[in-house]
Image (cartoon, rainbow, N blue to C red; front, side, top):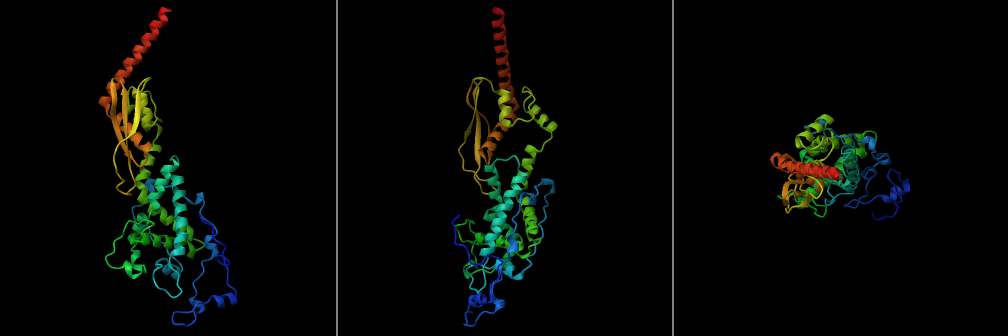
Length: 353
């Protein structure tokens, strides 16, 4: 982040009478703005404490409501109006949403990070970044904006009216989708700034519920992987491969190796061609194939898996291979015969000595 010169007036400071007089700006008609016309200063107490990890309660899929949560109140009507005022609208000394959007963006980014960190405790940093992107991207925030019919409050320049489409929501595009996301962040910032005592907690509880609905499928998937009981995991392992030793804590790749792997047997996880994207969030998907070299096979495709992360896609490919009971029995039998032959050879060598 580029450094900026320090302001001579920090948030929450009060102008002296002489400063107030010199800071008054004329109206467009030439008359002087009165004291009541001056933009209100957001009090410094609104910014004194950003959320800590204790402020974030991890999601549980069973607790996620399907109902749209109530819209938290902005206690200062002027701040609420400012949150919906586009910078391109001509105004008489009024501020646009830009500063509130800047504040809301910081809180939202931190909230997404904290909630994902607490909920997905065994997930890699790269995967956590992908999950966070699902929550903070413009298309997601703009969809919340529309669900609450915030468009009815938006004050937009003429070029946004008519049949103008939403657009792609990219930060480089000044389209309607990007603007709606900015206004949503500004409203979030206004909730925080207008109520120093409860604003932060109210805003965090609100966004947590909204995000929980958006990310519920990922939470359920994570709970299935990491929240199963030891007995259930052991049963799943046994059903995957009767010939493999009990390995309730092994992941699919390890289970596949335990079931049919041996010295000289190669299991390869390779990228497969494709240009798929997640249908809900538009992020790129990876497809991985697991191939067998050995037991009379050369580059035999055993299974495929598709996911947002290559490692996860590889585990899905191994899981698909394990589900092919007929094929697994063939290689398990070959492995068993190989192990028996090796044991017999070692026994004969021992007898010869």
